[in-house]
Length: 404
Figure 1: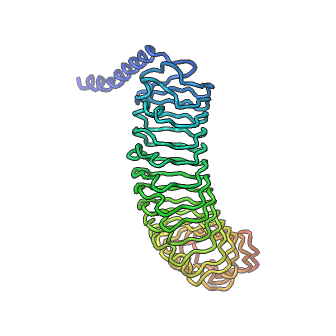
Figure 2: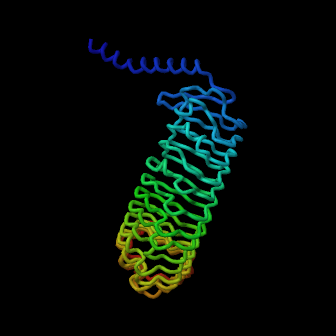
Figure 3: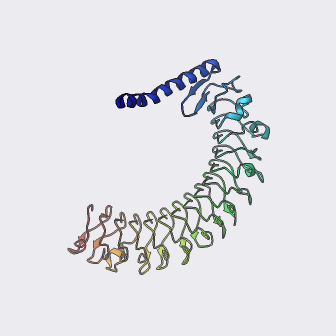
């Protein structure tokens, strides 16, 4: 009897699944998919209307009432499509690569359940107010957006988690336009922003990641990122920043990753890192650094990865790396610090956890006895592309090298 009961319990989920599959098929049969699109229905309440690459200029007529996701990418639509009564059920709408040039309120208002809206690669130039909807994901990358009207995000501020504005024509970020207290991720890469004013991002307490690469930014005003109390990642590569100072880093107490590669930074102010006590990764490669004073990295006791490659550093202040007790990887490739290796000054002492040291292309000719003193945990040492002619017999004896 027990064995029979077990078999019935085992078969039960299969029977239920078959019933629901048949019900789903009958529902689909009652509401045919409109030409030239295809429809897909799943058990997890994902019901897709796929109209990609159909050369559509208008929405298909009479889409099935059970549709919740609509994909109309790579068509010739010039406005937000109208799906009639079905619009209120749609949670995801993707309209990538069309010819949409504006977002009138009345065209978006029917989508009262919309959570994801992807309008990448259209021709939208002005962002006006969005209607009230539970939007979580908004992608407006690769448009022609040059104007963010005041309050444009106000009606979606309580739900929006991800906002992408990459590859647009933004030159100015208006004050208070980003009052988005729930936003986690903001991308504004490849625009035309030259100056970021104070308090530009105030009102985004939940922001964790901000990406502003390739804008040509020359100036970050004091307090530019004030209010971003929970931000963990800031990416500013490929801009024209000339210095690092605590003024524009003010308030970033939770920052873990700072990417500053490919700028024109020549100065690191003495107290630059005062607010970045939790920083773990710092990339300063491909800049214009020539000197690192002894105060260059004060306050970065939790830093694990530091990239200084592709600069023209020729001066290292005494004990410049001494406070980097947590550092695991140091990349100083293609600089001019041969003297620090050749003059036995123990420049790397203090980095007790350093695992990887990259010294490619530094014109090093000799390795002295104390060149790597204090690096008891070093396992990977890269001295390639130098002109080394002599190595002291005891220079590497105390290291735990796995690769050289």
